[in-house]
Length: 193
Image (cartoon, rainbow, N blue to C red):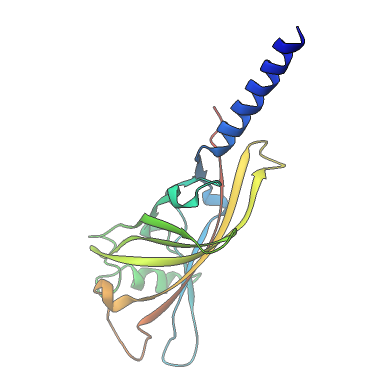
């Protein structure tokens, strides 16, 4: 009987370790995700816009982060600068041309750990019908049971610097900066079964 109990405990511990080592798939939460970008306007100000989140999936392998991935769709219909006239202008043909290209997408191609909480996430960013490789500097904020949602959750921040002219959106450069600062913050949860 003692041997059976010992084997059962070893088997359960082995199953727990195996389960912990598997990649976990998370659904990104639009209510707790901001994709902010800012630019310099004629040297006077640095406006910011939020692209929001349409849908996003994040797969995170805590034991082997290189097996992690992210896939995100950002609908331009949600673009928000808090200035309706500017929202409208940014969606027009000289910038995003949202009627022709209604979404921005990012699909990772590699995740390289820098240390236990920092990662270089490289992927294909598609904006204005142009796809280019982009590297995000990502920071793992927290992973564990969410106290309100009662499910496994994860949170990341990420930053990048892009050139909008690389994506065919060079209107008014250099008076309106070509360089765009991107800051992302997101929470994601394991979908409830």
